[in-house]
Length: 190
Image (cartoon, rainbow, N blue to C red):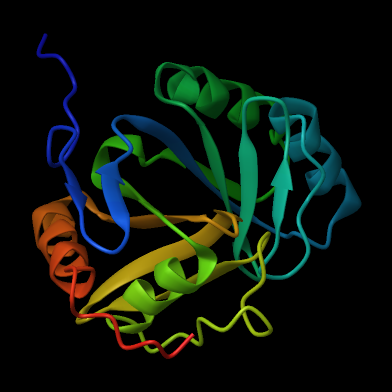
């Protein structure tokens, strides 16, 4: 069996912000009725997180649970634990209308770090999402696009954002972020 590798094999770059591929990250899509308290309890029993509010993030010890849409959550966990989490969620949600899928190897994950203003400026160059702190605080997630490809973005801290895209466009997104963060291309908007 082949060994899993990340989309751009740990690539890094520095400009007015630092970019780094996060490597292998576990991601499990969970779909169902988020308003059903039994569904929420079943998900919480496996993820160790409460259900996040709209566009929110709930954090556990080694995982994050992200609100992705009115009927979809994304569990971010250790890559090697994703399959076990799928099995546990499937068992816990038995009897509930649901879908649980390991999407870890279909995604690329990047970290963008620097000062908050620099990170927000670099991302604002490539997404239509409002990157201002007042509109996009730490602890919220946005599904948007980077140039012409779908992506999700959240701020882990004011100094670091996580960007997730499809693996098939991982190299493109990395190059896009490198271009947007070249030293000397600062706009000073934020």
